Image (cartoon, rainbow, N blue to C red; front, side):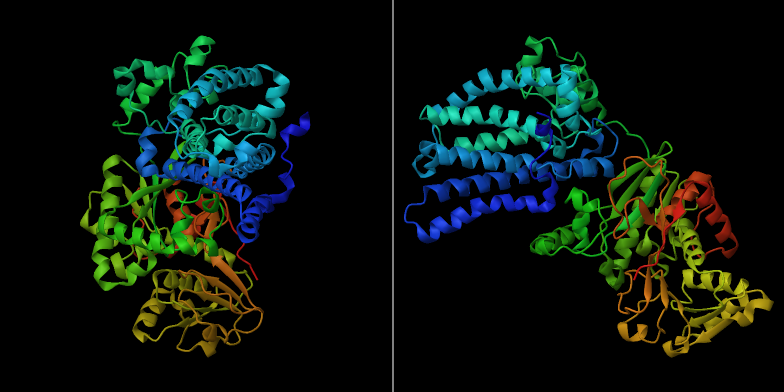
Amino acid sequence: MVTLSVWPWESYGNLKYLLYAPLAAQVAYSWTYEQDYPRALCCLHILIICGIKGLVHVLWSVYNNMLWVTRTLRINPNGVNFKQIDHEWHWDNYIILQAIIASMICYMSPPLMLMNSIPLWNTKGLIALIVIHVTFSEPLYYYLHRYLHRNNYLFTHYHLFHHSSPVPHPMTAGNATLLENLILCVVAGVPLIGSCLLGVGSISLIYGYAIMFDFLRCLGHCNVEIFSHKLFKTLPILRYLIYTPTYHSLHHQEMGTNFCLFMPLFDVLGNTLNSKSWELQKKIRLASGERKRVPEFVFLAHGVDVMSAMHAPFVFRSFASMPYTTRLFLLPMWPFTFMVMLGMWVWSKAFLFSFYALRNNLCQTWGVPRFGFQYFLPFATQGINDQIEAAILRADKIGVKVISLAALNKNEALNGGGTLFVNKHPDLRVRVVHGNTLTAAVILNEIPKDVEEVFLTGATSKLGRAIALYLCRRGVRVLMLTLSIERFQKIQKEAPAEFQNYLVQVTKYNAAQNCKTWIVGKWLTPREQSWAPAGTHFHQFVVPPILKFRRNCTYGDLAAMRLPKDVQGLGTCEYTMERGVVHACHAGGLVHMLEGWEHHEVGAIDVDRIDLVWEAAMRHGLSSVSSLTN
């Protein structure tokens, strides 16, 4: 019996979806070669229903992760971490199981197989289904569910898997063992089969009940209280006819109560109703208008491009939990995403994107509703600065300690690396941080200590200047690529007199044809990369990263740091970064917050603070990420 805790296709990975192939093949074959195709029609309905079931879960997940809408109504305030996402990765196993069982029933029972003979609607069928559901499905599920909890062997081997998700989520609803889902197949299948056997079944009934069953399961696990407490005050009987997300969340918190499927009436009859069910639901609804916990730290991010926008957790949670890569099957969604982008350009403001906790500090990522290309449109710069300024002022108003600006939000040409806002609002309590000091530290600590010469592009930028000044103090010869003699000389004069000769201006890429350490702050074309000798390593702080054109060279990722191990509730990857890794400017803001520094970090980088910031990052448990990739 222990085998019922393991799915037959558990080792298949994504190949499990080939189990739908026989159904699709039956549809294709029957419609191509058979005049009468009842089997094909039955298989087609099964495939459509399975697709809608999956979509129901995805849409509930979208709603759950739209934090700017749901945050004030969340029941469990914690975030869903990578461990839970991986645990629930194959939540849709039950849909495959139901497809297999449904096809077997259709093939074994001719009356059910002939879907073309079942009417579209039958009112008597609805009545029959409700009666069977209330008198059979609800009590059967209640007693079996309660028994799974009270029998230690069954709970440990079969039901604990479902309860291993610490934060309820729509995907948690379908995430259970084979035994549990076989029980659910009986619970959900009997009303449908019974109605059809009584001769009152209909297409609408089959679709409606199958989809509504999953809809209500997702509702119970959505972790967002969507019902108004006033509804139950006006119609008290509803308390016993439909459960709420709070009601089922209490079952996950206190597992000896609230066992019902959808109707709390059976918990009342079984004396297992949690006494806090309705009071907690009312408390959550009333608290929705109150100020929630203020984050100590905010990372103000922005979109990169239209495709990467679909990497957001409120689009596909599973994809957002992995480093971003272009997925071709998402291309059909591009036009819709582009239209959303245009809408955000007109109406949207900075919104809550994701969150995590670090040493009792709430850390949030807010998204400025702008994409990379918009930052380079002259007519769009004022609007972008207005968005950033509004986010900073909101953070200041609610009591955020530190707000860190992502790559393009601190662009020198846009707002002087944040100086525009600090100068305009001298009384800001929130500390504005560009994080470039730690970014410079990460890049500099990646460079081997024995390097004698480096080639630096983007040499007169904020980061380029700091890197050049730091390296020359170490006695490293820096070939600074720039056409501006004035900018080069200005930086050179900042260096101590005895090190100024280590800074060398070059105007062409061929000047670095014998240098194997390139630090890239300006995008390189494949032709420009071709000047690098074999064995060159490209360190980079350019957004977007350069193309990995040279096979005989190695490429570093963007400057990044791994978060401390005690981070909690983190379930989203930051763009192309690995799990638990964030951009250095993000980490720089965290260090600023953890250290309790009171100064703004905007404008030019203080070279003397680079080592100080690096040491602080190490002290707080952040760690460097190896950047060598082929």
